[in-house]
Image (cartoon, rainbow, N blue to C red; front, side, top):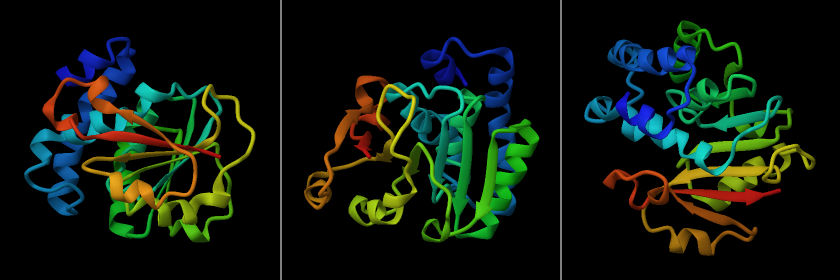
Length: 206
């Protein structure tokens, strides 16, 4: 939690309490349905929560924004972002039902009324959104093919509607495949921890 306070010092008491509750909730559910590796559960706030919140260093979503989190797994980046932006609507989808059960239970325990969780493949969704977010689900070019027609053209945020994709490592080869214009945001510019040295937010405007 100290990490979250360090980089997001203006949390309300409710937001602070919700972030503080994450560790116990994830330990409880992870023991039953493995959504986070055993070694990572001890680094939950750095490797999962703060990493998810890297998107909030790139954009401050305005109230009423609608966001799709594809391949959310245990709820990342959607749940931390939903805590930080309580007036923004999040639709978290994953093809694995057990993971969606964890997302549903944790969202309910936190009282997050702005989260809808659904077992679904993104290709089968009929809705459209302002932004699609995701965390290293697959290579970027096929991912963009899945979500290309899920994004509304017109939005009210400072960034144009589009995709915000969290990924790390050497992305040079992968980005050469991408035919769309994109912008890279280095999370090492926002967070001091070594974990973020190669982590990036890739923004692809609609």
